[in-house]
Length: 115
Figure 1 (tube, rainbow, N blue to C red):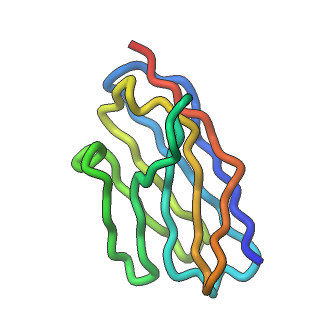
Figure 2: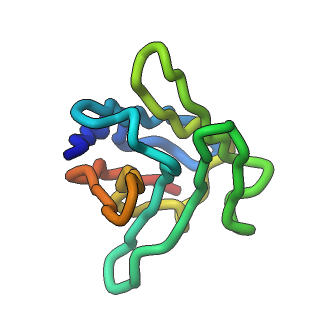
């Protein structure tokens, strides 16, 4: 079992920055890939960014050049640095971890970008 707890969401103005954190616990050594997803009202959940155990990253086109995903293995924490935020980035952001055949989710953290 893997437990994920997100933090760092909030209200920010257009062009501002936020850093989301995802703290992991449990069988974290079995985690192969971690990622951030988001879901805006009335829309499907979508991939934002993923990072492998080895540090390889991939981003949605909509956030490339603005968001950076990273992992601090010593702190068992994954981050999402979000810069140049836009109103369309408003959503609930979820942390995800894949371990074996299982996928785990955090409870989500709200990010609201005001214009």
